[in-house]
Length: 424
Figure (spheres, rainbow, N blue to C red):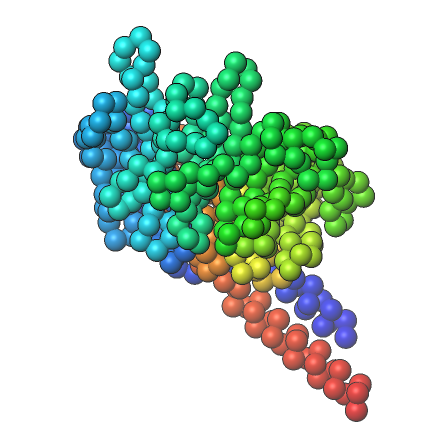
């Protein structure tokens, strides 16, 4: 029986390997006025998209996928002040790709000033920008700021955030939805009441994500700080500074939005708390919370303990996330992508993975969990080989290492046989 226990322990710490580690794009000497690559996203149909900036001339920004170039920056002026700059993709559903962009609007003293906008591809239709009509706000766009990071819902509506300066530094914050040409305000600071709070309204609402008709966002107000969800127009708490998560003895320590990271797959949620004393990665499946890993626990097949945890993604109950060690000033560097898909926490890729270039330093993944579709991940790995900076984009399929999968099968079969004999 002792060997079976040892075998099961081995299986619980065995690494996840990768299958089809595919190079998507790569560039060296990355920097200002030089070629650049955005972080790749994975659409709901498995297609991977990214932006490659070649130069600042017409057509210098390319929307790409694995089939090649899909579109380029048109640099056309369709109305006074309109100078669309094709930006990085943030989401994709079927053939529809959501892009952040730039809109050059007339400045008060003459010339133009740059603001953000959201575009849809194909067609590069401008969906939201500083001149859009927001219910309850005047048509005067002065002080209006639209974030260029939006996300597509199942009906291809776009959820995003907007803020407006009234008297600096006073801001109005909103969570909005754009459906076709119509924009609705879902949550607004100073008006919407915080659930579970002291009756006060939100003072801050930012960073919305959406999937399956469920919106998550970060909010503050009413004596609370945390992550909230909107389902059918009703706002409820996901995790706030009064929530005690499994494995912790006290409520979540949340000072501001940088202390949390969150994504959802419908009502399922992956959540990261960065607090050094009670941080970790959790998931909520069928309304039940469980902890995946805690800060200051050993990195599987790595060196040191988890210290930096971030950028979760969740699909079909499986979670992937970024993790780093507790002391990056003492070699070796330890950054990687990890998953709970095979039981426990296993490594998918880390800095020891053989990438195109040597001496990788860290990984970058897309916001909103849009780097994992339940099967494949897409990510950027960056480094410095002491000659020139570089960035390379990859996609990969996390799979159980064959040896560990066999060991798990043998252990399970043996355990079943023992139970049968005992029941005889």
